[in-house]
Length: 297
Image 1 (cartoon, rainbow, N blue to C red):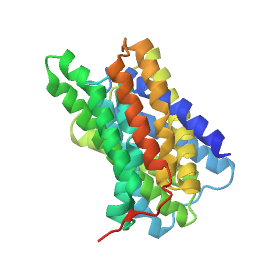
Image 2: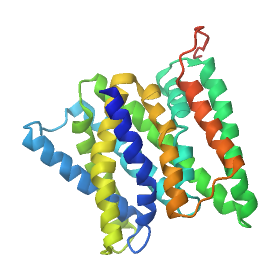
Image 3: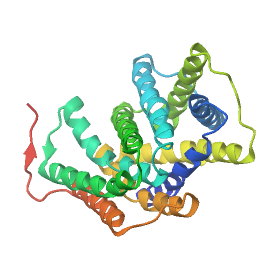
């Protein structure tokens, strides 16, 4: 079962990065994300109603689900959508793959867990990989600040995603399944984005181009309903740190999609960078033989 969940997440999320870029256009970014998760929430609610599992959230879970909705289905995608204006979508996927490291760091900061020595080593290797991957972008473009902005936005989105992982793990420990919490979290995230758009005076414009609608459907149903449910099931089964290992693999899918659709060219330095990032994530994921852990406090 875990292998099937991994495969689904890798293949689906590996292609969603370019679909995000296809949504940039007439509709404001916040509204595009709201349409995506509003539709995904509707699909999940219909599924839950059909399975006779639709019910209000427990009172003590509302706060966690709301924060999870902001982290996973709102703020992080505002970062990722805007990052795709400045860097290739495949690069976003590589930055996102560092969530393995951030999950371990956030678990220490917010949950008091120790950090194993392999996590520190893996983080350093992954950082060297990101430097190698992005260095050609800085040298090839006159405006390196745009590349830096894209990198910063992608990292911010990854941090939000990591925080949402830990919240999902906590909700699942309370017996609340991802299909159920995702429905309410996506709905909350979509409503926050719609309200923010109204208060900021943005026009409610829906892009009717077939490419936009196709990207929306792909992002909402496979990308959100199936992808997030499968991924958060892995979080519940394996823990946030181990589940994030699938993010090591889908950058290969995303970078090849970027090469075909965006004209991205592989270079020896870029290949080395991706390999270093993957090696760093593998080190974070690997269980060290010696129980050498940096204990909290």
